Image 1 (spheres, rainbow, N blue to C red):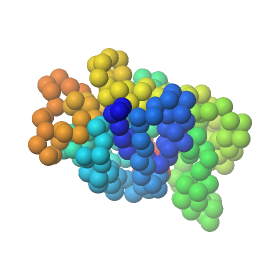
Image 2: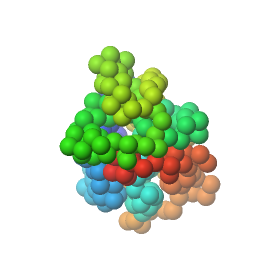
Image 3: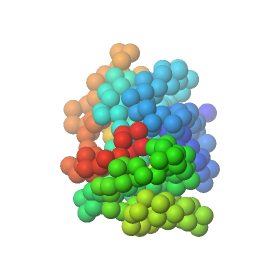
Image 4: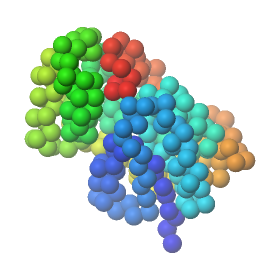
Length: 256
């Protein structure tokens, strides 16, 4: 019987992960999603992920996490260090969809960029417009978005309806608009590697924020070995990552 692998993911990635799993035939991967709304309460993400990891121990051979840092300020990485579980690299999902290097260039070229993915384009009204109360107080738009100059839609699919939604979002926010087709970006390679436990030690390892015997459920707080010397540890980032852009923003953490 093929080893079973659990991927614990943000609910905002569910559609993309299920699409990759179906297209690539990754039957060994099972998916457990936490509510996408946790992004409005990022301090709760680390312990929610820990709870899922501990529920899964003994039932899965491998566990991986499909969360970027996602506004947890390194706290998610601390939990994953303690549990001995690896996650996909990046400060935000924008980074692994666009590719770490490409996203670093985007952030450096224009720090005042507001990003949408397919999920955020689809949920813009609920999560951004209504979430910030702009439906009730549109006069607050410039207070929230005054430091932004453009909206970049990182598109996972070629969906004209989502493109129209992203364009409309840019117009409502008073921002220039740019669409970049990313496909599934590094998420695809991450899931392919996770399905095999990253056993070959090949190029897929670069997609991990850390790999202490990547995904090994025996590692971590329950007596497993520490990460090998020289391993890329959780919390390491490219020198210029998404956080550099976010420091220049006014938008509250719960949406940014």
